[in-house]
Amino acid sequence: MQKYLFLGDEAIAQAAIDAGMSGIYAYPGTPSTEITEYVQNSKEAAEKGIHSEWSANEKTAMESALGMSYAGKRSMVCMKHVGLNVAADPFMNAAITGINGGMIVTVADDPSMHSSQNEQDSRYYGKFALIPVLEPSNQQEAYDLVHYGFELSEKFKTPVMLRITTRLSHSRSGVESREKRKQNPLALPVDLSQFILLPSLARERYKILLRSQSDFEAESDSSGNNKYIPGKNRKTGIIACGLAYNYYLENKISNHLDYPLLKINQYPLPRKLIEKIASETDELLILEEGYPLVEESLKGFFNSPYKVKGRLDGSLPRDGELNPNLIAKALGIKEADFPAVPELVSARPPAFCKGCSHSDVYLALNEALAQYGKGRVFSDIGCYTLGALAPYNAINSCVDMGASITMAKGAADAGLLPAVAVIGDSTFTHSGMTGLLDAVLEETSITVIISDNSTTGMTGGQKSSATGRLRQICEGLGVEKDHIRFLNPLRKYHLENIGIINEELLHQGVSVIIAERECIQTAGKRHRNLSGLKQK
Image 1 (cartoon, rainbow, N blue to C red):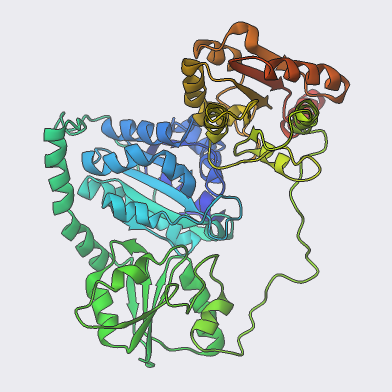
Image 2 (tube, helix red, strand yellow):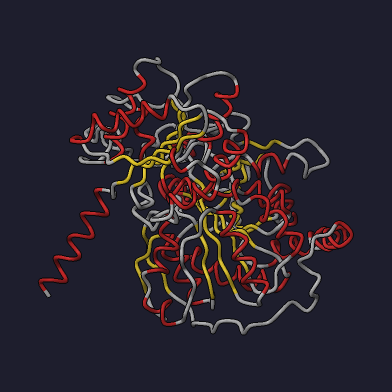
């Protein structure tokens, strides 16, 4: 047993190593990225042969993790909440196939949208798929629930979701480890038709999943992960889920509160424990990060009208993260004043790094498009999304991974010509290639600029699947060789770059312009590492 000071992400990663995981699959996405990075940098994981390479996207990661489970090994797949949208097809169907080796789907949600397009609550996906969901409230619980999650997965032959949020992912706390477990031996499923979802077989698998629901609920009531704590003040019962428990705890200590409390760390909801707290109180206040999943669920739990308060009735805000002050207000505590961000800390808007290649791409593109007017550039998710801000004001969309090319295609189909897509190298191989294939098949007149900085820059410089392969990929998708062009995004080539863009804007068909220059951050890191090696 060892003691660590861990980020929530690090606690999950070490727990998976200790619990006998054989492979972790992921695409970088804040706030989940550090889980896989920890395993990649772990000497112990390397010695144990744990697979930890990045996948092209979340869907391929999910399917690879399921394949490892098929072979009897324990696997984990990690993503942020919007990544689960990409992985939704195999995620939903994995609930029906079930698993062989234990499998945990770790999803990091981002309330308040610190680095995301929405506040999506992944617990709804868990409920939609009818699988157990675990939601830790601190780093120690995150570590412990990984061990429990693998055991739960293998006990019921089901994938298990581990749902965390940004605050837990990126805050530190002490964690005590458990005894290490060996990896599972290679073992095929007992029923070799288990993973074949032909309709006749899928119908039977679905019935098995439905029959398991009562077992999942009984496990939530009895596992000990959901805890009922009696209280003397029975006016209000508190149901606190995951991280929100900590915000209540601060109020409880500061204001000497003594309400009955049900702490939720496991779903489906524990019906017996909920009925117990409901029978002993006049009303329930639901504290949950994200959407009002529990609040909505409880309205269908009781035969008679029962007062349930939370995000839906206005007791708590419908959007954003919770905090101790919001919970104090919901409890009617007017004098509560927990520390907030000091006024002297001013907001700093994001900006391109000094010397970033993306800035040179946008300067050339803006000048080339000046003759056509504004509103013609569709972009995507990455560092280059900052081109939306001053002084560039160069892009007009950022919807989801890969949408730049398909939206440009749709706009061109509507008659908006020229139409330009700007996408990064990692995002292109994540989900841009299929859109380019659509455009090639229909000979759509669009200009695709792949701003290639040879890394996944926005999440910290992880390896890009596209590095060194973009020309071959585009040729393989059918783009004409004469219309695969290259830019050197440096100021001294500015006029030359404008000329190349202008030529391709006039082309009646698909053009791909690849702007190649290594990310200024990863280049600096590489040079520093080389200098260090030379000194040694």
